[in-house]
Image (cartoon, rainbow, N blue to C red; front, side):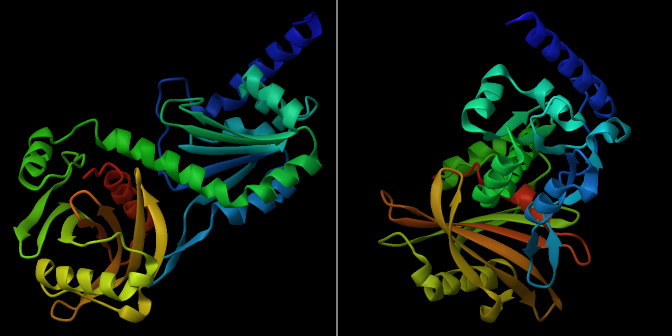
Length: 339
C-alpha cells in the first residue's frame, strides 16, 4: 500500500469511529426495537437514496385487520449520525466517494476485499453483523458511481428487506436462546420425535393426541407457537389450499377451544422456513364464543420418510398492538424446527 493510500484509510477509519460515536463502544448492545432502523445517506431524508430505499425497507405487512410497516425508519445525514442513539439496524447508502461524509464512513467500514469488489464490480451490498457494536447489523449499499448504485438497488430491491429480516430473526433467536428450556426440548423430542429450540420465556400451553399437537405460549401479549402433524402421502403444494385449510380448521377448532378461520381472508404461497421448503397459509382466526380474533400463519412441511405433514402454527392475540415484531419472534423460533 502506498503512503497516500495508507493515509486515506487512516483518515477514513478515524472519521467512522467519530461518526459512530452515538452508537456506543464495541461490546455495548444497542437499545430499542428490532423494528427501528437508522437510514444513513449523504443528505438524509431528502437524499435520492433515502427516497428510493424507504418504501422498500418500510414495506407494509398485511395482518388482515390492519397493515403495518416492517421497519420504522429514521433517515439522517451522514455528518449528523453521531447525534443519534444506537439502533439495532443501520442501513448506509451512498457512492464510495472520499470527498463526501457518507463515502468516508463507508470506506472506513469496508474490508479491503469489499473495497476491491466495488472497484471491480462497480456496486455491492455488504452485510456487517455485530458492527459497529454487538447485536447491531449494518447493511451497506455502495458503488463506484451513482448510475451503478441505482442499478444495484433496482436489481436487488426484492432482497433488501429479506436480508434485514433474516438478521433481525437471527439476533432475536440468539438473545432468546441464551436461556433454553433444555428439559422441555428433550421431553418433546422423546415424546413426539421433533426438535425445536425453546427459550425459558415460553411454556407449554397444551398438548394432546386428538388431533396430535403441542402449543407453546409466551405472554403478554399472547404469542403461540404450535406444532401439529398428520399423515400424508405426498408433499403439499399451493394447489392443495382447500385441504390445507381444512386440516388447520379441524386443528384450531379442537385445540384452540372452537377457534375458526375466515376462508375468504386466507392466503397461500410457497415459502421456506429453516432448512425446509414449505407452503405458508396466512389469515384471520376468530372465536364467536369469546368474541375475540387475530392473525395467524401456518407453515406446512413434509417429511417424506415418515410420510408426515408437519404444521408450524404462529398465532398472535394482541388487540390494538403492532403484530410484526411478535410474528418475527415466533418465526425466529419456528426456524429451529427439525423433524
